[in-house]
Image (tube, rainbow, N blue to C red; front, top):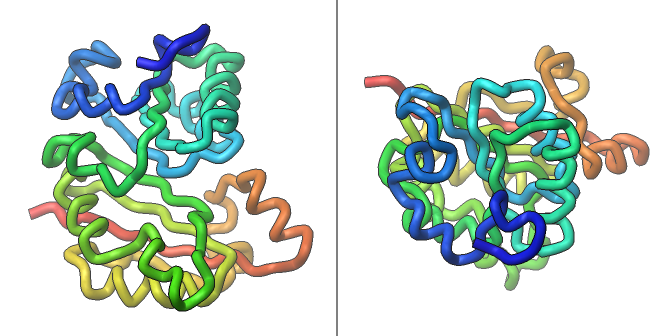
Amino acid sequence: MMYGEFAPWSFDESALDNRGQWRSAVFQCPEHVPLDLEIGTGNGTHFAHLTETHPERCLVGLELKYKTLVQSIRRSLRAGCKNGRMAKIGAEQISELFAPEEINNVYIHFPDPWPKKRQQKNRLIQEKFLKDLYMAMKPGGEVEFKTDHYGYFLWAVSKFRSSPFIIEFFTEDLHRSFRKDKNFVTHFESLFLHKRQPIFCCILKKAIP
């Protein structure tokens, strides 16, 4: 665990010790309780929204920046929610962080697009990451991916199509789609909307056998 006032709610690399026992050891809840994951929580508006509107679910957030990690857990606690935990660890370690079929839904909002060609190897959405994510998710779980970068969106969709996931939905303008009313506008998203930039979105699903 991390130090300071948020120690009970946040982890550093010690989070890896929770693999396979997030429900039992960390949240102390039954195994049937849904466990969701947000990769890159930013300032925590979406993280807090999820913990507040879905008290029946548990949520783990991954954030590498300490300041925004603290913002995320603070927002959730201020809302009186105790069903969220944060980990200062990279998403590329997901197979070390979660056991097979341990998590339900996953949120990936506005990851770094690494726009230059030589940087694309640093993008989160890669074949290995998607394979590891698929293994960590329960059948029926969904992945919500959003970005403002069209090049990254096309890249991601091509990777999704060659992955085991089913593409349930994708759009090049989320706020003109039928999913608009279901969408929670994150802080980053509001900045792009103010500039009248379209939001690209894709929903993936792990099929139920």
